Image (tube, rainbow, N blue to C red; front, side, top):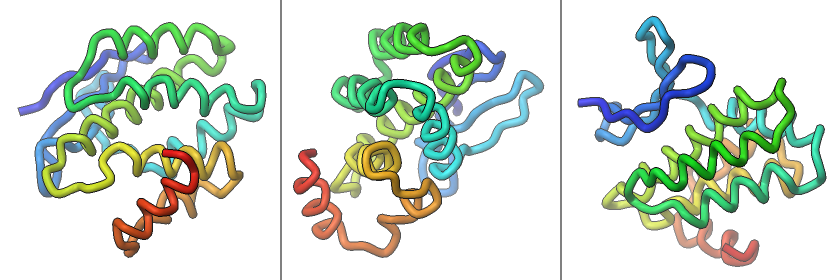
Length: 162
């Protein structure tokens, strides 16, 4: 059974629905009902491109505001925070910023709800940090944790301050 997270300015919706192994798969649903699971590489890359137009750490700082308030539950106040953040971007960037910040928020909620996940939402922060703070390509950041032990990733994250 799907769960609506947010209706977006672009007439799409972000939802949770059944994925290949749990009910925490994040999907973008088009106005015609077609749904796709967005890839980390796509939103990391889009947000990196957007970040070039703004003050050096703006996109990452905005993400961290959302990260710090993310729990296991969808929180209306965080969705309102996303709306407020979106308003600080140029008109031509608002649609993608809203979409991707909502998708990342949903992805962090999903990580927080995975019973056997040790690192939880910190995995998304690592990817965002690598792309937006360290300049690592979206493609590399999206696959960085694949095949790595959680303790290795935990040590990397602690060294980065989260």
